[in-house]
Length: 237
Image (cartoon, rainbow, N blue to C red; front, side, top):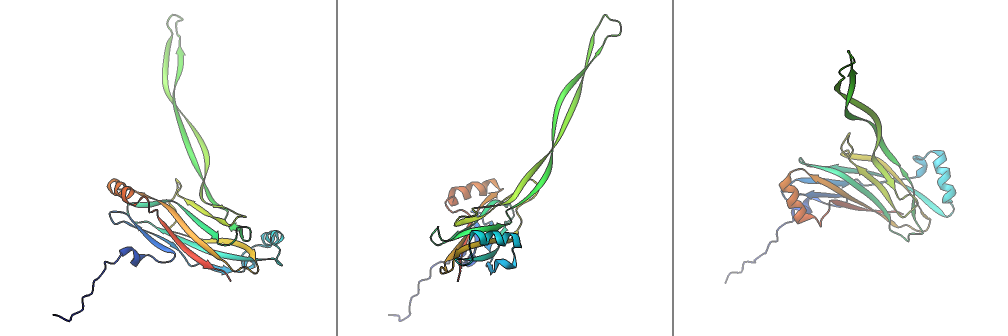
């Protein structure tokens, strides 16, 4: 009888090789890889980033003797594969403490928007009367086009949840541009009791458009319970 040791090997999950804390690669059924990545947040003293007026307002709402203010700088990367694009993404911050004890007191930017000009055309017919002899009336109809120019504001990024334990930003594609590959310089100011270290959970849930019909249908059928997402946890001292 052989003394050789038999070792059973388990197949490696390819997803585990591409994903980690704060990063996830969401793959379609036909292999298109879309990466979502939350960079490691930077913790700062809010005084380094806030103007005097905003800081004074926050200190009135959350007196320094009882509360600590912490600024979190965040960056989000959404990298679509060819044949895909991100339609929207929610970057959600959750203070994982008693809801009454910690809130996100300030989010910057509150909004990023652009103004686009929209032209609306309306077609119609115009007429003129011709009665040279007073006996026959001829009506001549000519096509006319009326244009109206309007301006419309499109919001590409908007904050939500200020003053609550769960807040963040929603990013959306607009008619003038896609969602940026990297959205940085996002700042959230957390107000919490001095004696409470706590943690903050950072989650991203995205919506991806798959432009190839076959891949779109197969991915919906087999991965609809697995939305594109990523997560990271921040420990506060």
